Length: 65
Image 1 (cartoon, rainbow, N blue to C red):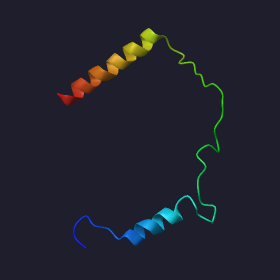
Image 2 (image 1 turned 180 degrees about the vertical axis):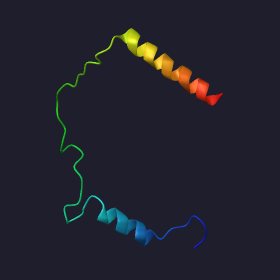
Image 3 (image 1 turned 180 degrees about the horizontal axis):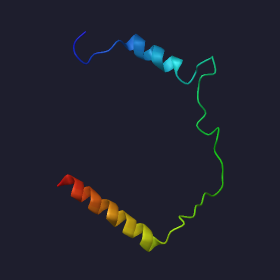
Image 4 (image 1 turned 120 degrees about the horizontal axis):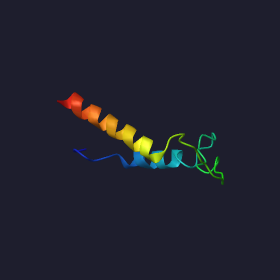
């Protein structure tokens, strides 16, 4: 086989081992779905957070110099 070629039997074996696994090793992506809300309180005003972000950016600029 040349560069970039593949063994078709190996590809078929991988496809058969995937979703049809008899050992129960498949993952149900919707097993932990829930309907609800998530919320949080920052504990600081938007102005405080923007100011803190600007301070962090300024520190990063100082470190780069």
